[in-house]
Length: 168
Image 1 (cartoon, rainbow, N blue to C red):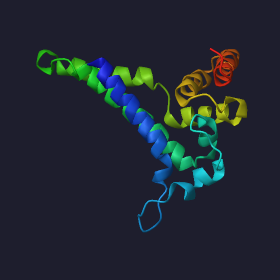
Image 2 (image 1 turned 45 degrees about the horizontal axis):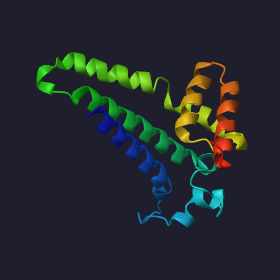
Image 3 (image 1 turned 180 degrees about the vertical axis):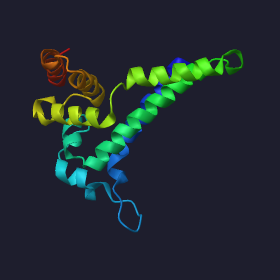
Image 4 (image 1 turned 90 degrees about the vertical axis):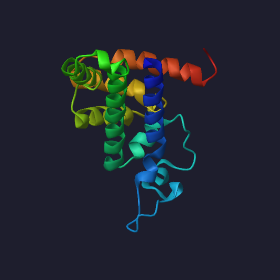
């Protein structure tokens, strides 16, 4: 059951990441074409899907806010499904609610605008563009907390660069 909840949350996160440009709409509420969205234009025609850092830096502040809100929502769904996914008839509801709040706080422990700023700072270095958002999110948590992360970030970047070149 927890695996199903995790897969559902991951699917929601990925769907949101791919749908962010569609959030930019004209005043008549008709969806903007993907190539007409500010993010797509700023990122260029040769943007690779795996190049999330370029997508992130090309996003408007509003699009980044929507992305972070989607992450928070998916974490909330994951925590709720994990806690309440068991037989709800046999659980203390006050304890379950407390556990859901603790789960959310442990997975998203800082203010969303702080995490967004940290992710933006990490993706400002174009060498980090190939790193997926979940990895950068983890490093953003270290950055917001004030922990040293640069050495590990460099190691992870080397690993992803090696994989991109066909190495294991």
